[in-house]
Image (tube, rainbow, N blue to C red; front, side, top):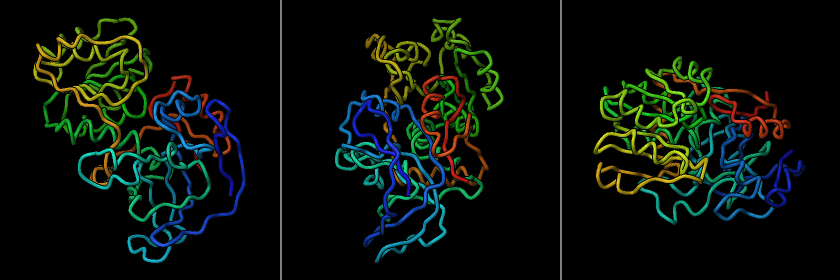
Amino acid sequence: MKYFSLPSPGAGLVLGERDVPEPGPGQVLVRLRGWALNARDLMILKGFYPKPVKPDVIPLSDGAGEVVAVGDGVRAWTAGDRVAATYFPDWLAGPGTPEKTADDLGGTLDGVLAEYAVFAEDALVAVPAHLDFAEAATLPSAGVTAWRAVVEEGRLTPGQTVLTLGSGGLSTFALQFAALGGAHVVSTSSSDEKLERLRALGAAETLNHETTPEWGAAVAGLTGGGVDHVVDVGGGGTIGQSMIAVRYGGHVSVAGVLTHEGGADPILVLVKQLTLRGLTNASRETFRAMNRAIERTGLKPVIDRRFAFDEVAEAVKHLESRTHVGKVVLEIA
């Protein structure tokens, strides 16, 4: 089988070959057919990731494929099942804890940038039947985190207002989930062309944050005092404006850190009585709940561009360009 590894941060990916692994007791062998890239993967490849990374790691956390073989004692899966791996293999249910989130794919553990991989029986979920493997691969990070932000933590109800930032995978998932839930969605981007795409996905109103740098106040004005919920993926560069955009008593989910510069006045948290919640993925239980909703509604993830497995370097460059709307994926036919 072919696989890519990262000898050291910033060294570049290396293509290798090795024997297909055998599943041990309680393990499942999966032939991977689709992969999705995330901003976290760029941080790991370039050596900017703040958490420990396994030496010579096989990168990427997000992949989907079909079960090929199972080890002794496995009851949940059989050959031919279509599955995706969970980002945190040990976080099965309930709130996150240091123990449940200690290991993550493509970081402390080898990830999925390989033609075959072995997973623990409990570290997989069935994927919606209407999705192809590349579409299913978009779910473990961007999909799950957006679902947790909008539905699980945000507790969205019809008629609420939600603000999403940008056009990346997590933000487009948040837009889709919020629109499906009956929310009035406001979306921002630096590109009028992207804003048109976001309106087609369900955004009721859009703002260009390049031409409207004080977009927080603009959003508050558009929504009669502020949105109920912001899904913030920018970090230091956007959190201040997000706190201005949200209503008194509103909720800000901090689901990404694309920029570190900037900041926010903490007095806004006090004066506006805001809830700020940091999100790093979610449990297998949450993943399953999201998949049930996706299957019942027929929702399709937004894919910007598909690359072949061995075109991963080109896919990384495309993600770095930030010209995409939705997810950048790899696939094997």
